[in-house]
Length: 282
Image (cartoon, rainbow, N blue to C red; front, side, top):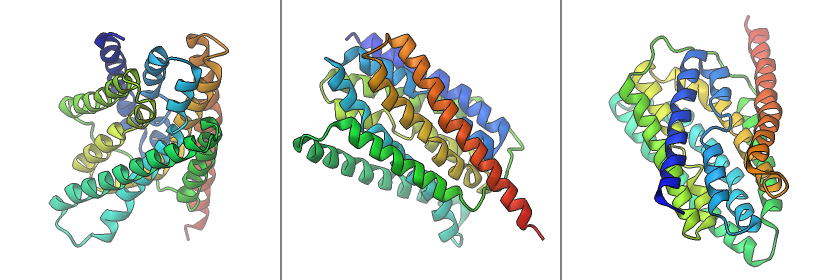
């Protein structure tokens, strides 16, 4: 693989990240949170990893940890709702760095656990995709649980600056480029984890907080955690379809199914929760 392949995947991911985050800003925390987690940066990552995989088994091994990686991301997002509420007495200027540090520590710890878990499972001969589908179910259950009581609708009053948008794209693009490079070096398991590093989630939370305060990012955490299931489903479907179809058809089919099932289903679920909130208003 030439370095240009990693750069191309990174640039595509950066462009998608910027486009999606603009959309999230304009739609608000609830619906924007779900739409913002449709398979976007994972698309160039999947194509790039497939291109450097030696065989379908290596690619499946890289994709199978993705649901668990998205589960860590969902927990990462939940930290952004819980920690500021628990430490509300802290000066506001310290809350963002504190929450950032805690959320990243949680993510790194979770990523290390996943690597150890998959290495143990691999030694026992359990098919990676079987474990991946199990992780998808756990992720879906977590997303439903954190949104079960409803999500208040909060909208942005201003739009982020161009430097903030560019920083989101740069972070996302760097993470995806690193994933492709790791995949080429033979570290397929680590590549799958790197592909779901919460670059967009982190920069979105920080940018929203700086621009609008705590309420908007907090309202988006639950929908984003639930919507993350679409990325997990997309990754698992590509592991099955790429070897049966060509990359283009496999990508399109996997993306459509993931968006219809997970994004569409999440939007419907949240609409019922919104009705629940409204019905409880005295």
